[in-house]
Amino acid sequence: MTAPTKRRQRRGVVLLRPVPGNSVVHQLWAGTKLLLVAAIGVLMTFYPGWVPIGAVAVIVLISARLANIPRGVLPSIPGWLWFLLFLGGLTATFAGGSPIISMGSVEVGLGGLLNFLRITALSIVLLGLGAMVSWTTNVAEIAPAVAKLGRPLRVFRVPVDEWAVALALALRAFPMLIDEFRVLYAARNLRPKQVHPSRRGRWRRWWLEAIDLLAAAVTVALRRADEMGDAITARGGAGQISAAPSGPKAIDWWAFLIVAAVCGTALALELTVAGTSAVTR
Image (cartoon, one colour):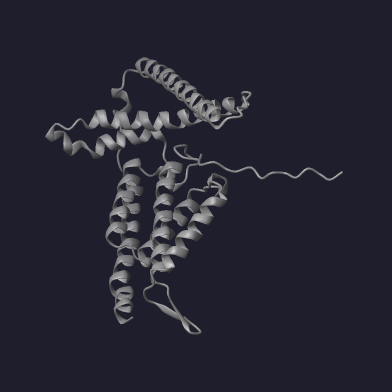
């Protein structure tokens, strides 16, 4: 008898659940992380070159190393995603552009492929930034940080505290709802399925199962909302969520200086060395 083959279990996406630790990245104020991510996002929007992308990737990798982020938090990449990336790179190659390489009597322009790879790398880097904030920040620290950052908007009668509370509740409820939906989906797969010979019967069964699943999801969400409302009321109301004291410390100013130095150097190299080489080509 042959030994049964072990099917490799896929790792899901781990978000909005901080990795336990007490590193320098964990000790940063949540508002500092949000400001740094926003600043880097603006930089990547106006200067999405290879040098800034590489600099931000180095920041993400060093931060992950300092925070002791394990490899197990990274999700498994499905095969269809690799196929889509290959298909996108293949179609982007047809756009041509410099640089051009000669393969015998055929000239192939790699400009479209390089642009596709640059956009893909930019997306991965930005996703890594968001994941680092999620893995090193407690959800309870987000609302006080947002309330403090939005304090100047109170002059214009903007409901900053209410927005911060709504954001905190959404971030708290998101992981719970994902777990509940996974349980509902698993329970649905365990139900015996009726086999209909006609295509119309199969479509009707699919629609009925989708309606039942949506109804169960709405019921679970309402039940979770009722339980969360009771818990918030028992702890002093929604105002206590954004009223927790928070603010930057000395380590946050060092983080600002380091990120500003790295991004500034990358931007200078992008505008001088990389820009000059592009003009020369």
